[in-house]
Image 1 (cartoon, helix red, strand yellow):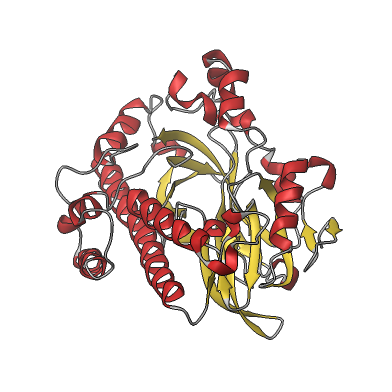
Image 2 (cartoon, rainbow, N blue to C red):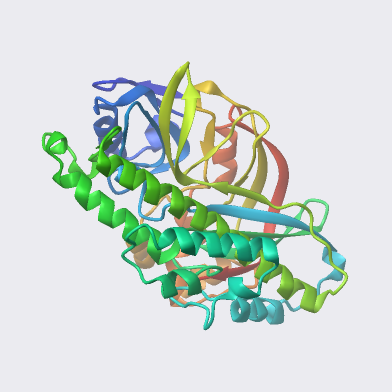
Length: 393
């Protein structure tokens, strides 16, 4: 059950994080969300909660007849994918640098794209999805060129996005990655957020970043169309990266096999029924954790991650945290930590250890074990992972 319930102007705020660990700015932001007249029942706040733009990261907001684009965020459909391999720790070399470099060579990171669309050389099932997404994008009046959309299918991006090779507690090797809808999702989100801010019914809001579209309007329909397309694009992007990553692994271990992949969004909107009401549920930094749903909750580039199974807790709108959550901003981390700190915090992990990733230092994040303990009523742990290779954008 939530550790704290706060009174909001319209609905209460239920937190799965200790109140003393939640920044006052975050509380203000949550109260602004809870004051929106379209929010239903309550706002659910996950244990990895931290400050975001407009809506708080780690929040689950259920609305009736409305949706707030900023509550989704600019990386529409951002999420996780993971797959267990037939390899074990004994199959791996002592030096994993060649494997990391091969992954970086196969999957563009940061702002980079494939020189030619990688999805066109994928198996038929993936290729059909890629073509369908492009065909539908042509009907969206999309602000990004179709060529860019196509060449970024199967690319990582930057920031906190990553590709990892992990070991579970039985020494089985897993592949895991975190990414979203790349530049096209960002541009589509910013386009719709700006439209929402100008709508008459949003002018009196305390925080205009929480501007909403109302169901039954043309602008709502346009956003819903673009939103759902971007969410599918993000999922496909992860599927393509897993395909490319599996090819890299086969190059080193030709006999390797892979289990069925696990995939989950953690920045998205879903049309769901809760407490008997049809709602638009926005999870910004939260995964769906319905009864039996498989999910992925990562820590940081030097700590554990978890494969989990949802418990279907109705009070969280069947949701759970999306990760450890930041305990300090990127700028704070860059001021606080040095390259030596990064090296110490990522000892034993084959990864970049340079100034460009200092803001991703593990101690910039909350303690993942504490986060997991605070949501024992939301998910059960299926598998514990620890990375041995980490690729950052």
